Image 1 (cartoon, helix red, strand yellow):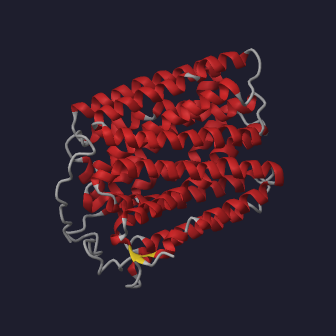
Image 2 (spheres, rainbow, N blue to C red):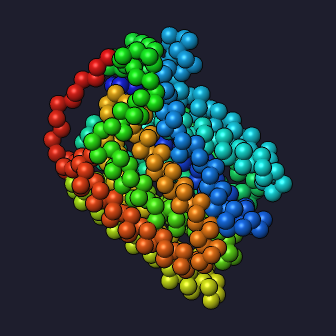
Image 3 (cartoon, rainbow, N blue to C red):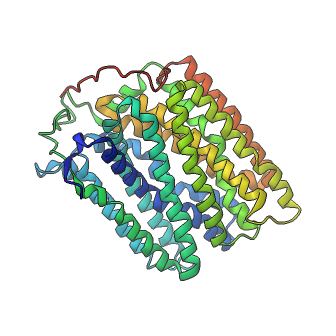
Length: 444
């Protein structure tokens, strides 16, 4: 049995377990909705354009940078109680509220109460996006530079494991036992990811060592919340880095936006999609995350980014010939389709881990949660815009040309990102496994 340990003094295996549980908690409902929602909408005859626009339900993930500086530095409940810790004080209520919202969705009929379902999905995205701010700041705090490659591999892997559970196990159960039973199981699994939090403690914000004291946003020590973001943008090369981050996953998102509607149009059932994408696909994503962590550890940042860009574009390109074959007939869940899904998710996992590792390097120690959230929001805005556009693209170009366009965007966007980051050394460029410099103490 684990003893309760201060969160700043956890041994390596304990802090990795904690972070894995927190990221898995975010992936579980996302995996469920990203798999189930497009299927439900398409089965009800919703247009491809509207399905593409449903990605806007993830808007909180794109806009979370607006409240990240406040959430990153403020104790929960406004510091009304001195005993409220800065990180755990937010994680507990956000996690429990997300579980309550998911349980509430289990009472709905998704075919007749679609508006309430969409509202619930938006609320859960808002809660999970806020939890992600706190978790990302905690990850930057807990992981030294030499552990960030493996740490980000664990982050993406745990998130995808949550997506496997939510996107495969729960979807198969929904097909067999119904919507309510599936979502109740998902709620139970979400609550189980809280268990590592039971064995850690955190000193309250005013007394925690190395943590900034929460005073007033108008003081000299604590800049206004938007000032934190403006300070980040004033850094040399920051705008070029944000553009590179936006371009890196653009083509991959354009393809992913129409993958599920395309498969529904080929006659695949909810259970088939759960097994193919939630099982084979997200499982391959786990392996991709591990390979991405290895690449981020062994290669320089720029070489790892280039590798990720090339393999990601290759994975997307595999859908082009399959879409042409499907236009003349139907595809089965196995064979070449399963192979393409596996390779696509594997290569996407590699690229994601490398990108997230570079983003973590760019964070300022005193504003880690806000900085990382800003960069992650740029990724979400870019990928969300691509997914929103994907329905329009597929409807007017057809699936084969749509996937060809996505592959081209993945290749050109990835290469452009690498060139931008080489021209503006905003991110770390050295090998990840280089000896660490002595830690710089945080100022109060």
